[in-house]
Image 1 (cartoon, one colour):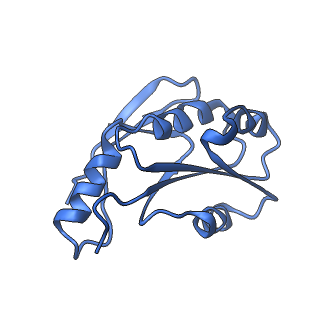
Image 2 (tube, helix red, strand yellow):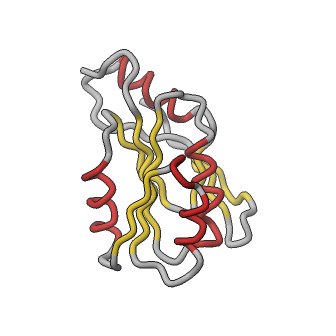
Image 3 (cartoon, helix red, strand yellow):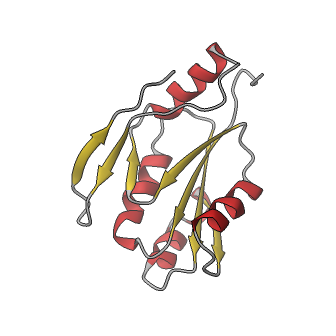
Length: 138
């Protein structure tokens, strides 16, 4: 059972995707749900990603690690997350502003649910919107 206002941890993992990173982080920070923490795990990138991450200061929690693959990046972020709800976000995707709130509502209304899929925006290498991926909130 979730609390009335559960913390949502948005976990962004990445490796050499600096061209997408600002959009992904901004979409997580711009959630309308007020109890959201943003964790960005850099898995040993060699591009400008770490400078981008540093530019967000204490608005995000950053984890900088040696390259170990996506699973190890998720595990590193999950280990420090504090949220009752975790939203995994690839760095080349963008959350729509109300998704955090919608995910919380689904979990609160249907406590037997263990996973919720949601709509997100895919962006291309230049930051332009590609397809909207629609997944039913259940």
